[in-house]
Amino acid sequence: MGVRKGKQMMPMKGLLAALLTMLVGCDQVQEIMDNQPKPDVMLGAGIEVQIDDDRTARVFGPDHCETGFGDNDPSNDEPGCTLLTGNDRVQVTLLVDDRKIQETWTVTRDNDRYTIARPNGYLIRTARADN
Image: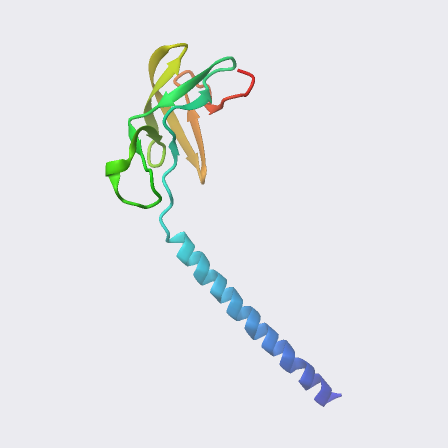
């Protein structure tokens, strides 16, 4: 029985070694991913959002929208976006009922989730389809 037990232990040791190697590899992949730059979070130019329970507005900001992924060429970027990344307040222009309204919105980040609030405290959200 002792010989048999030893033969059974060899595959188990090999499996354990392979498992440990994979786990170390996972840590290395995670470290590489953690060190990659995160993309900027922006509101696109003219996006329609809910600004109170009954109204929507199109939103324009002072920032440029990148037109290519990582192209690093600002010459073809489009104006009118609102950059949320790195900002706790953003200036926006709302188009509501053919009027332009200037506001400063508060931006809060919790991990990868962004919350945007109007000066009156209303939380900005995606426009409802029934408006």
